[in-house]
Image 1 (cartoon, rainbow, N blue to C red):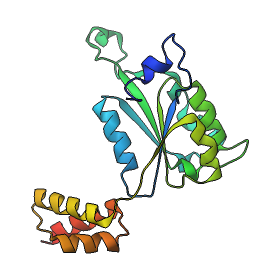
Image 2 (tube, rainbow, N blue to C red):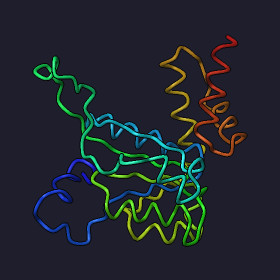
Image 3 (cartoon, helix red, strand yellow):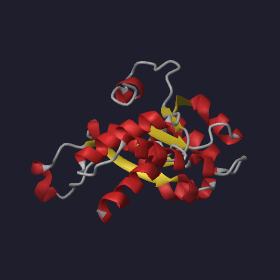
Image 4 (cartoon, helix red, strand yellow):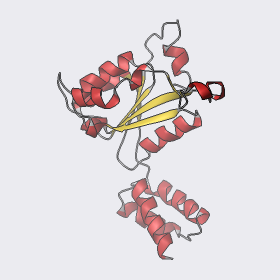
Length: 202
């Protein structure tokens, strides 16, 4: 709902009140945070712009890396006069900033610049981090819709692993799925990688 109504909330003449302009997805690695962001964006037919924040740690690097991306609401792939009449509908954008806890802190940091960018952005920004308790993420959180992910227990992962295995033609017993989940520390991504390797060997 937050993403679907973003433009209506922040780009209309009405005042948005205390609504957050960005979202923050936090939780342990391998739990599906980035996948969730990409799927939600795809469901809304948005153009996804994805950056790994660890590559733009500083204020300067963030500004140079993103340029004026957040200053334009939509993105069009057609600009020549000859095709102007056949232009496809412009797509709304969403910016995904992954691993924001890898950015620097302080006045010259990427986090400071990111907060400034959120305040002035004309597109929604989804921030993703592993360490929700870090001080720099605590400074970012007040500007975001705070969504915390928890790692599921092994019984839940095991049931889903058996289901996925069945869909992919790989026979997985429940006890084996539980053991795999436990050995991977309940990391869904690692479990799926092991399931894929298992399927390739058979």
